[in-house]
Amino acid sequence: MSEGTGQQSANTKKQSAYAKFDHLAMVYILRGITSEEKALSAEKLANMLKVYLGEEYSSKTTGRKLKEILDIQDWRSETDPAAKEEKRRLAKVLFSLYSGKIRAAGGEHKRFYFEPCLDDASMKMLNGTVVTNSFLSQEEKRYLLSKMRYLNMLGEYGERAADKGNPDEDKPDPYDEEVLAFPGEENLFLHNTVLLEQCITAGWQVEMTYGIYDYDIDGGSIDYHERCDEAGIKKYRINPYAMFWNEGHYYLLATYDINHQPAYMKEIGTPVNFRVDRIVKISVVMQEEARGRKKVKLPVSREPIPSRLKEFFKEEDIGYDTYPADAAAFDSDMDEDEFIWVNGYRDQKQCRFDAKAYCARFPRMRISEHSNPITCRLECTPWSLQILIDTFGSVLKISESSKIHDKNELDYNGRPQTFIEAQIEQVEFENIRDFCLANPEYITPVSPRPLVNAVKEKLEKILKRYS
Image (cartoon, rainbow, N blue to C red):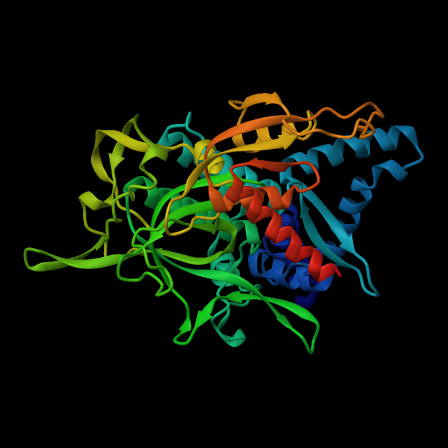
């Protein structure tokens, strides 16, 4: 046997030994960095596999394995009943094992990507549900969130790739094995959500940059970037108090740090709402403090909950938890968003946020500097009453309408329309005005008169734009 033949035989044996792992590595890479828009050719995938499996790995094997997987997943087109059932079972195993499918993108050359079983919106809902669940202990939340990190393959690339402030050449190479992780939007959202939840629980200030959509008239395109001011990228230093879902979005309730409040905001401690999915970067605000001869970094405590928000918070026992990092210094070798936990436990209390009551007071999420809660009456139909209950809850005072209506007005079933009035207690004026403007076909303000006039004036201005 020649030397070349012997080397080839050794390589074949090596490749045979790797074969038991190549399918796992293949799915790991596809799941980690691809999407329908960022698919990989079989050749590119084979080159990446060589990083993990050695230079002996064959690109022909990659193409064959991908074809086998696609063939199994396409079990519905199989004509032979026995083969179809076998492929169906294998497809089910693959989908369950990897939480998704491998797909082939269209185009001149075949490229492959991983399609997760849950889309971004579903992952965000799951993340938010865990963080805000009042029946889960802190340990249970951490456990579930750690599992979701694995499901999302949260890693360094996902966080660094979102840095829109860096030039393109400074961004990590998505094919570098050191940063190989899923770069999806939901990972950044999960990272921010977890960090915010920790800061809210521990009572720390945070600094963040916020995203905004902008447009290019000449190019006719929409761009998403960090919000800027005269000094460059705008940084928000805020006191976080709660996160909650409202109308399909996840919000952070906060106030600006007293020394970093915008000039246009006259009243100190005015609450503001931020969309959590629009937060691009977030970090704990740190300060140096002397501990003997050594200086250590400690988180800055947030400012007290403002008086306007206190009625929406209720202090409750949440069981025993480890001491948070305000009881110990941050390790200088750790990132600022990593936390040190002291050995030992304490009986911990936490302020529970009543999101339902808050959204009923501010149904349009608008908070003016001066509080102006009113009691109002709105006319609606039995059908549009559902809209009111979804927003304000079912504790409403209902009565017959005080207005006279044409009996020829019919409901969706062709029957004479019924009108009723609902009284809503303590809702902010601007919010209920905007709520009525958002539902003018179904809901009409009856009292107080300033509310009726404000809605009427706005509708008249809108009508002028149409004419």
